Length: 408
Image (cartoon, rainbow, N blue to C red; front, top):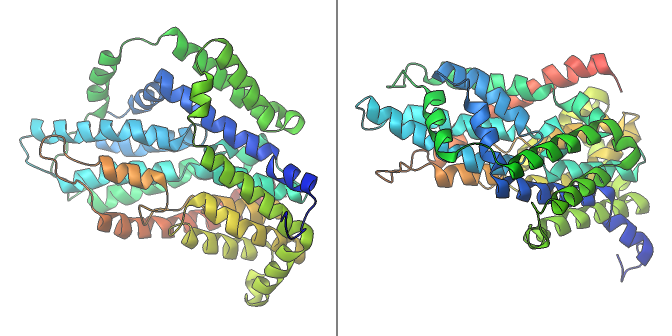
């Protein structure tokens, strides 16, 4: 864009350093603080408290986990909770005198992973893909606030988690050998080893609550980036997060999302996005060219693509095309933009689709025998079903359900 004169240098710099980019940088920095203090472990232990049976683990823990992943790094929570689940599995089968129970392993590992993936639509803080969509919508002057995003996205999350729980319960209830599973008791024993919360954990938790509160109440004034910078300053004053921690965040991710925002701006300003959108719409059947039909087409395209490439890259590539499609057809851009962002969380089939899947697969090994507890085929087989169910919930419960009541 510099050398071809697409935008002036100042305009490129403005497109690159958007509020959404500061927001994703801040979220990565706050995630560092949460992991450094061990607060992610506390959150995981708190969520597992009610799981006194497999049924309660599926129908109480999974929705809580999914909602938590809407606000806290899903990668951090998966990285902590997965070893707990491996420990729960290993202890449970050996206490029952069973050598292995693959059905139980699949239920524990995959339900956790899919529930975490489904937390993506809940809030802009759930992942960089949402920040990219905020940047794209900013180009059209219609960015939703943090609270507005939650209004349109959070109701999807617990319902999807319950659907995931129901699928695994119905599919595996007769195949599981060990029926008695008390994750709460085993986790309580693990929490006793960690000890009580320290001052740094309390300060980090207070800063996180303040941050979410500011996002919800003042993002229309201060944007998404302002509150997160304030939170980083507070944590720095209390010596919880230092410059070396900031320097160690994945800056390539920040650069990727900044570049995606700049590219989206270029596509919007030059009219290239409208050209691509018009070309895409021309091949769609009439019933998918506007309103909920266009939202379905956009989400279907995004949801399939996100299984074969990273979710952030998917929104970066597809978002600049789908949002102008809304403008052309007279559909509210939020509807199509949010549909695209939400569906980018549906990377359930392959481990390359999201780090959550890769982390879950890598950690799902029996600590004693070293046996791989879940296979790539398990991801594909069950992930395909969950992908189909995700589309069903998104279309029926979200597009034709509570979105109709909320309106645009």
